[in-house]
Amino acid sequence: MKMDVKICGLKTTEAVEHAVALGASHTGFIFFPKSPRNIEPDDAGRLAERIRGRAKIVAVTVDADNDDLDEIVSALKPDILQLHGAEDPERVLTVKAIYGLPVMKALSIREASDLGRIDPYLGIVDRFLFDAKPPAGSELPGGNGVSFDWRLLDALDGSVDYMLSGGLNAENIGEALALTGARAVDTSSGVESAPGVKDLKLMDAFFDAVRCAEAVRPRSGSKT
Image (cartoon, rainbow, N blue to C red; front, side):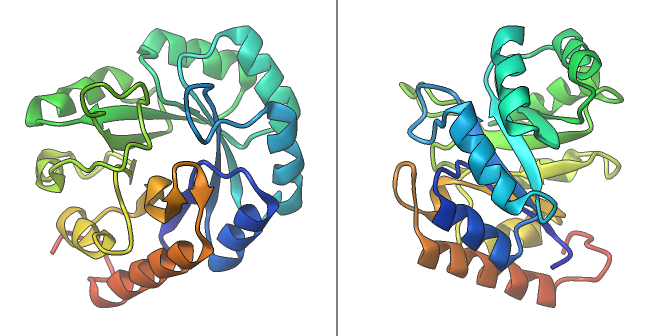
């Protein structure tokens, strides 16, 4: 499958192995205690070793300090760091300098003006991840199972490399891809039977839906 597909919030051997067998290009491990998908660095490291070299290993953190990142990077040996908090461009530069790893910066989108937050990070981050802003009362920056208006991305410069996230599942991924032309997608809650519990059948359905969408859209990946 040409498209990058990231399955995030992995916590079990079964889910990790299944995601990669289905064709996941990226596997995400979340290090954020408030999340039902939180995992300890050593546990994540053991899971990652099972699929290293077959998919990119992504460490997802939220405003983590250097001590926490030291522990995560040492145990997981990630290919990519995903910064999903309020990290500013200066912090991103610092993280890249310390760890020498590509950084994917998550930005929350709700309205057109939110896209203006991209500019300071251009030339600094290696890829963006566009997620929906969390609903009122949520303590989670992502994984809330909500989407944003994908049509907002019509205004995005075509040169911006991003991964689409936010409430994606087997039922809506086709529409999301048709409207955005995204070449990379991320799902977590969309393949779960309960918060933090990956459902293998839902994972199957998601990949089937992605393949169907890929089969009918232009080879160039342009928006339809």
